[in-house]
Amino acid sequence: MDLIDILHKADELGASDIHLVAGHPPIFRINTQMTPQEAPQLAAEVVERWIDVVANETQRARLSEQQDVDLSYAVEGLGRYRVNIHRQRGSAAIAMRTVNEKVPQLASLSLPPVIETLAQLPRGLVLVTGDTGSGKSTTLAALIACMNEQHRKHIITLEDPVEYTFTSDKCLIEQRELGQDLPSFASGLKHALRQDPDIILVGEMRDLETTALAMSAAETGHLVMSTLHTVNASQTVERIIDMYPSGQQNQVRSMLGNTLQAVVSQTLMSRIDRPGMVPAVEILLCTPAVRNLIREARTFEIPNVIETSRRLGMVSLDGSIAELFFNGLVSREDALAHASHPEALDRAMAA
Figure (cartoon, helix red, strand yellow):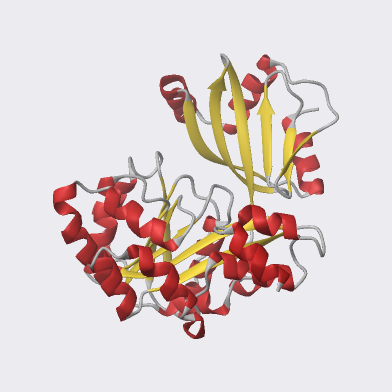
């Protein structure tokens, strides 16, 4: 079995991730479950040989220096993959995530309709958050595609690596890949502001410099979209503020209160009505009341505002999970496992 055979098999089974680790058979993640394949254990030299297939000379040099490298890999007739190559127990290992060639339509993602309105925003900061594998990149790609169909704007994406590829329609879209087209997100953001963008997508706000530049870009009239590894809206706000030294946090609260437009926090859950996944989503829209809570360091009150603002399109994570349960899409056990407040959700589902 060679690498292409493995990727074909993963495609047939609908795997989201492929893990190739020396001493183990190929392991696929199918509907969130790690599923070993009936195949021989992979020899270390085989995995090393596959690295030469997916990585170019520059990427292999980076792997040798840093012991980790991220890249994208495409196979004609199959699709594209987001790849991480790393070392474990002295041997090479490869993790590959499948990326659909076709950017999905927002309507196909089972997301609340209010998310489509984010594509109409003229400026500000929009954050899509969640754990790894929660569909953040897919949601952002669908928003970009929506803008591309509706507006005449200049969109610059800064990605690590490029996942979905876009064809400019009404918008001019430039996609820059970390390590290939720019040395860091912060550097890409700094220079993007001189490239006449209307919309900037930053793959992840992973450090203080990137976060500060993203907020400055949003404050100066650009629409900036990015991701964070946080599980709900209030935690997202606090994570951003906590990146800054204590002496700057009051100023940052004011800046964030002025620039933040929305936080979409999502997690993927296994469907029980048919094979596949469905997102549970928390949505915070920055109304004047929310902006005041951020400025006044009262983010602990954000969940209450979300609960009382459903008419505006806001929804809590537990509210979204409860709706999925009552619609027969997810199991009770899975609902409680993903809930922010399992006891309260258990009572609500029993009512």
